[in-house]
View 1 (cartoon, rainbow, N blue to C red):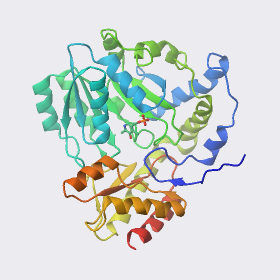
View 2: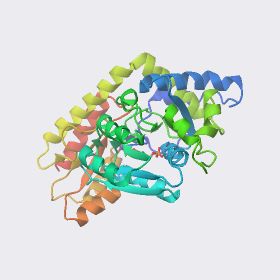
View 3: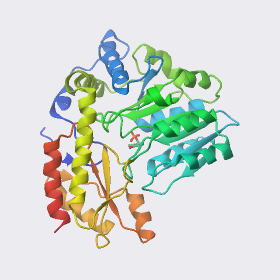
View 4: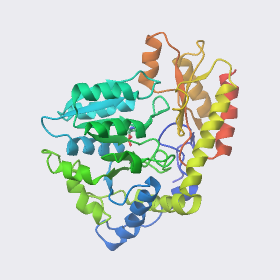
Length: 376
Ligand SMILES: *Cc1c(COP(=O)(O)O)cnc(C)c1O
């Protein structure tokens, strides 16, 4: 059967454009996940992930079935003990997600929240650490709802000095920018396949420090698939704890080889900065439109744009349909954020995802089309 679905070029913030070679690798053979064939895929995948992360040798890589959220939940369940506090630092919807995961898992959770569009202020973080004395702190490397990249080196330094473990959600930036794990020495750094890695969704990925493994020994009720200590023996054999998506594993084998050995890690990071700069230039050429994130904290993988007063969130949804007819999937802003902004009498935002294997030509063509529609 031919695909009954349209070929849309995705300019949303995940899932993302998947290049033809990766789609082709989806046709490679299914394999047994406890057979020798498994290791042929996952050993290079995990080694390349560590190279891409620049992760120190003593970090373990765990691949979770599901998506990034599964790895986030595992970090909370494995590392926050009874009688301890977890402080969840949020600059937007995905920071709120960490807080929600901690809360619904019955953890003693407190939140430090910054206004959407701002980044983590380390002075206020220090105050919250002094006030709450948390054992664990979660934070977002790249807030996908607002296009803000936090200075996680500075934040983790403050957290580390307080004696707490840091959990970093790097989901929408990993693969497009350095993880800084060697500097932050965070307890867990978490990502997913369907953002800057340029793959379909299906795995959560975690880089886990020795400190985190030691801590987990002292935490009860870690669950099963959410237990990093249950995951670890399998991960050390380059396996997943439960049956993986073999199609995705084949694609990921190809993609990780490509990123590390063909495109090259540094070139990939550079390309993301070029795409970011091209989008910034595009926005500066649009009358009445502004970048939402503060200077110095603007994401290399997603740009959030504040629209003029005359343009509503409802209008952005119409624009989405206009672009669909032209073969593009436009992102009319994070829904709850636009609701909140409009309720507060503030201007709405939209987003442009520029991550993964998107190239400058694709991006420029999209921006040209978008410009015509926004200025119509
Ligand atoms: C997409 C995203 C998530 C959720 O990840 P899933 O892989 O969909 O579970 C969490 N945090 C951030 C910053 C994200 O961009």
